[in-house]
Amino acid sequence: VSYDYYTKALAEIRSLLNEYEELKKTDAKAAKKFYKKNIKKYKYDKSLDNIEKLQRSCWIKLFNKGQEYFKQEAYDEALANYENLLVMAPDSIKTHKMIAMIYTKKGETDKAIEAYKAIAEKNIKDMAPIQQVAALLFGAEKYTEAAEWYVKATELEPENSNNFFNVAVCYHKAGNNEKAFEYYAKTVEIEPEHLEAILNASNTAAALNDNDNQIEYLKKYVAVDNENVDFIKYLVSILIANKKYDDASKYSAKWLELEPESTEAKQIKAFADQQNK
Image 1: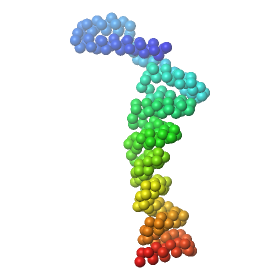
Image 2 (image 1 turned 30 degrees about the vertical axis):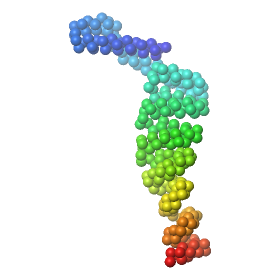
Image 3 (image 1 turned 120 degrees about the vertical axis):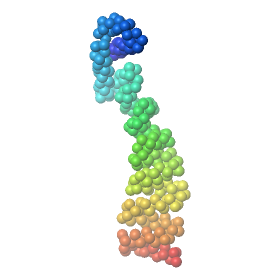
Image 4 (image 1 turned 180 degrees about the vertical axis):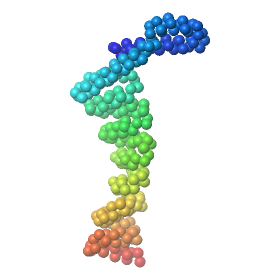
């Protein structure tokens, strides 16, 4: 109630001050008379700052009351409080964030998503609400829509490999292997030693029957984790299956460097060398 009172008072005072300023442009004498009768008499010019402070104080008290409800897990009461605040100040990012957090705590995912979307639309350069929307959509198994929101994150932070990786995972979950491979590849381009992205890129390429990229990313994996014997063995098996005997010989030699007594490595290298003749 106090907040509404101060809001109305401020509106009236500002209206009078604006009228005075407009009058000054055309009739200084009339403006001076208007000022004396309607503003100076009631000391509105001096009270404006105080009323603004009182208005802010009311808003802060109401906001803090909502936080108390939130800490007590009285989410319905907190929500009612913040919805009232939103009527008073529709553009308050703080209030929107609290409403989004309350819906998340209440398990009302769709409403939480809409609340975070509202924040993102009001503050397009804020990464946090974008990631919140994407994470909630992912949790709700709405993978394609989640990917679209993580794409927004890549546009804000194009050098952050995690953003591209998140897009790739979403598309992977959605069954869109073409898009998944595209974003795994971008992740590796930004962060060449991102082993999970490298492996996922290779596996996704295999799912697309893209043998060249499957092998290319397996090689990248071995280049980073060059003492992983099991993975080198796997790469060699893929190379042999694809009749890439030059590379099979090269990587079986690496295998032998790590396991000099391996009969299997010796046999595979001999076979690959024979096929190269």
